Image 1 (cartoon, rainbow, N blue to C red):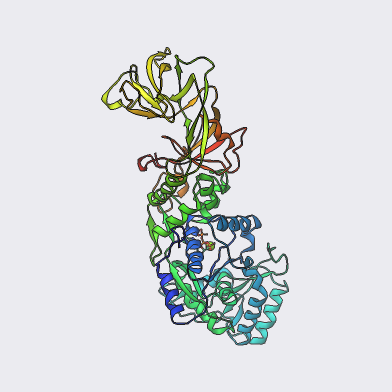
Image 2 (image 1 turned 135 degrees about the vertical axis):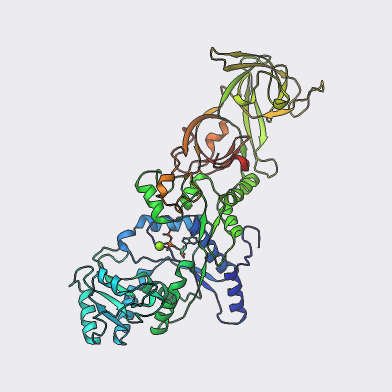
Length: 555
Ligand code: ATP
Ligand code: MG
């Protein structure tokens, strides 16, 4: 296997290997089971890499199943976005996309089965009463007064629930397990509720819906999932899932394994909180490049390989932890440094006139797109008037600035000639507005013949033959390291200066960049041609990340 498809040694892979060695199953089947109530975020990437990765590693299948038991909160836009995100990350599910709602008939049948076995009952307690009866972590619950209804009465009431005879919340179907169980999940959990809601997959067929807990494990069983991998908050639900599997005629008994959620600092990873950022228009949408959503990261310029590498770096553990965002940035920067073509963009331009060149001088120079990889070459125009970054010129020479351009000193123009500054002009405010220079002949790819070698190399573009580009500069979306773990509201820590838009001059070849192409703008940072707004007529690039750790997203 190549390094883009690493062999994982995480504990889930270890369990799978042992199970296969012991002949417990012929083929491993995993699944990624999102609820389509929002876009996927970086935490989901961890789960995707784990589930799809383990299946791939052992020649098994990974299903994509939408756990769609909350019709009011779900919609087709989310389904489409999730499918696209999984594919963008480089994974393909086995067979068709699956939906828990495909199994509503079967789940309904199994609810009837529990009723007939005397293991489920229709309860008329109001939600508030049910909460009271449930007890607390330290006190047992009390039996519902409806717990001993006969099988016939329960069958009749459940049929009438299904027929739409009752209002939402007036009654519900509960499993009859143990109101005194120390595990609250086993205190007669609700398994079917009345919800007169239209469902994106099943339309108006149902007005009762199974709860997530009654759906999840059985859906895995129907699909023949061998290793049902989920996050730690479901550990306490495992005894309940096992109870359902033991008390229903399921075709297979999946085993659940829990792992720690990914939490990243300076970020929130909860669809609900991300949705409020979208709804309150703090960001431009789910795919705003500042969002930790997969589609936001994509638009920001993350590559699928960098996200997969990150997920591999953080590993899979049995405890929840906080991951330093620097790890994600490191994975990204390493990938971009290795693979992104180089180009030149000048963000704060200062004009340099090379006076010993004719007015109409136009020379096409050629440079490789990458110093190590064969990514081809591009041509760019060299003219009498060029633009350099204003920070690269200093009026006075000093040891500190010896790599800079100063009067009487030389610099190398990247991929071009050596020039020497002869004079400069300032405006009334004392700002340098123009530098005069002369070209040192014979220095294209060669050192000056007189041995006076330049100390520094600067990026530049032609003043007349460069093009304008919009650069969107992003900073972290939150100013607090753990925005949703403070006493206040996470919204208080939104960085209101997290986007700034500037205009830069860039080399003309960049107009033809395909959307989503990553670049290293030399000495400036990593940028990506915006997925939606970039065009040859109006080039738009997003700042992905700075070149060095100290110039990371925070600064
Ligand atoms: P959220 O709280 O953001 O809504 P969720 O767990 O409710 O997340 P689901 O759509 O149910 O989201 O998640 C699909 C799968 O992704 C589940 O198996 C879930 O455990 C996993 N997952 C969700 N968030 C994370 C995370 N932060 N780290 C790792 N896995 C996650
Ligand atoms: Mg959820």
